[in-house]
Amino acid sequence: HGHGRPKGPPADIPAHIKERTAPDGAGINLNNSQVGLAGMQFMSEYPPLANVTSMALKGNLLGDEGVKILAATPVFKKVEFLSLWDNQITAVGAKLLAEAPHLNKLKELNLMKNKLGDEGVVALAQSSNVAQLTALDLSDNEITDIGALAIAQSPHLANLKRLDLFKNNIGPAGIKALTQSKTLANLEHLDLIKNTVDLDTALTLEKETSLPKIKALFLH
Image (cartoon, rainbow, N blue to C red; front, side, top):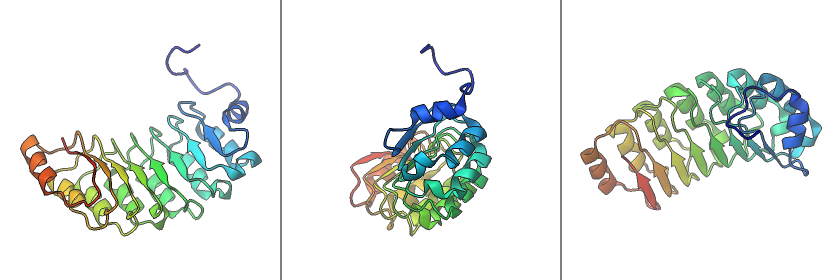
């Protein structure tokens, strides 16, 4: 017990999900549980989760098929805090989240360490489902200037206070678009460490930022 990650999914997935659901049904923490599609299917049909507002689903091998269930299920309509960190999600899954009819109350969305790419990020940036987000983590998602530009110009991300884009492939043009964005006016924290910009350029861009509320800016 307690030695690193579990070797595979729990023997009894429904029992594990029940155990990890808060008594009042408002939260579920399944981080690194590897419950997969079977787990997501069970959750979508589990009545105590009808009031769930917080779902921590990091490391559950959900993939795009798992996101498909999540996006189509009215039981998750109250979710405000959603973490899908490290779940092998591609642009297909990102589009499903963007088009999900019930996921329109999200305040924090963590999609770190997936494979969304620019296509997935563009879909999210154009979706009204992100309109209430105050925190968005898209670190380690193979994003280039195209995705950065979509975020910088999105009419739906005006409430964003924290944006994490650590470890992507965003260059000077994308970083400039973000740091001089007119729509990201409420941004207080922007992390662009480990992208494709040299130190001198990063320092120049840092000086030229026009984000009015920025407190923490990390460009290199």
